[in-house]
Amino acid sequence: MSRLSMVQGTGLDDLLSGAPGALDADNEMRGQIRQQLSPRLYALIGVVVAGCLGCEQFVENLRGPLDGFAAVQIAKDWRNAALAEAERAALAYAEKGTLEEGSVRRADVEALRTAGFDDKDILVIATAIAYHNYSIRMAAVFAVTPR
Amino acid sequence: MAVEEVAKVISNWREADLDEQEKAMLAFTEKFTLTPSQISDKDIEELRRAGFDEHQILAIALGAGYRNWVDRIADLLGVEEEKFDFPEEILKAFGVTREQLQNSLYEDVK
Picture 1 (cartoon, chains in turn orange, cyan):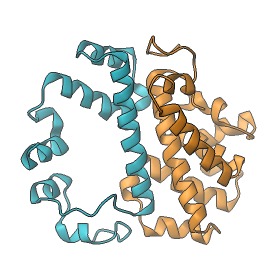
Picture 2 (spheres, rainbow over the protein chains, first blue to last red; picture 1 turned 90 degrees about the vertical axis):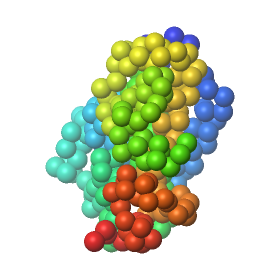
Picture 3 (cartoon, rainbow over the protein chains, first blue to last red; picture 1 turned 180 degrees about the vertical axis):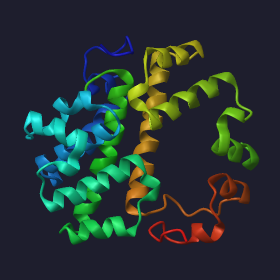
């Protein structure tokens, strides 16, 4: 149950319905990211951001096509999970972009290019990291489930 | 808001000349940003006690969420949201020099 009594429901979409335009903006941004990112990478970023923020309770909501057990392990310690090198590069960027975003430098972006991502991919990955940081915070703060 | 006041809010909002409602909002914003998993009913109650209704509380969170989102993209991609010649007081509050600010954010601070 949400911490706001005006919210009818238990999801982030129910919460956002309480502010004019917020749900439409969220749908638009989320839709754009999901069109351009594989479901697996979108889920991996969400799970790792949740782990970084101490919000492991949301892993089940965020895991998408990932195996449930594996997703929990990835949230706890993605470095020791069986992942492709490109996924590792994206998750290192997601972790740094969540915990110490002010320290991100050109070398961090170069690591993504070396892993095979082009500029458009990097823009979408950065947007996905920021989106998950926003939506997981909103869900945690108001005790609703992220989308 | 005068430049000196903005600098004080940036460097230590708790000691800045703000009213109690503004301080309640900033305490929530800080926790939203740094330790969202630790927010409890008590934090929401503090906002209510400060005079905010539920729609305003949601709006405060959306504002904090938006800043978290936009600033993070800027940090991740090494872009500045806008070119602005920050006054000396603001630079001091952020702990950066004007020379560092002129460099791309991708250029590691020397």
